[in-house]
Image (cartoon, rainbow, N blue to C red; front, top):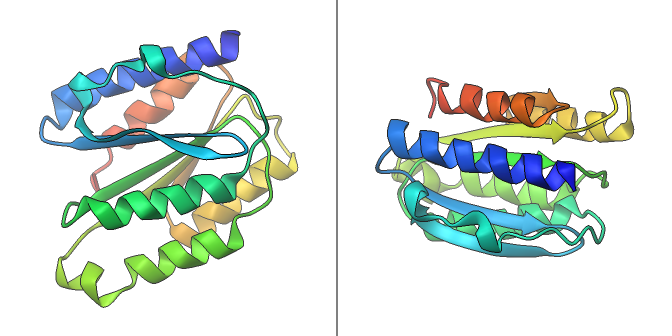
Length: 169
């Protein structure tokens, strides 16, 4: 539907901006619902084809996305990490997975390699005041960063672009 079309269009624009602003950056995308799957891993933004990225609308589990994200973070090596978590669904707070990420980014290896970590959360088509908004704000409180809320594809793109222009990226 419109939501998925807006999301893919925004992601396509964002990948184009990454290719322009951060040419050397490698991008990984995790698509999640009730499960999490790596769509692409450590690829140059300009080489990512979103045609095969499909929605299936079968529930939302943040815990699966964060667990998969941690696996990818561990495989990235000594590169800085910018984690942008975008969701249009509601799910319980991923307590254990966030704790595991905080442990990893606080680890000796992470500090020795001087890896920088930046977190941002985007709620897409969220009704203000819902539990969903509270969960995203709780993620920001625990992991740092900024939360964004977008109701249209244009606002979603604007959120991504604001993140790309932050000084800590």
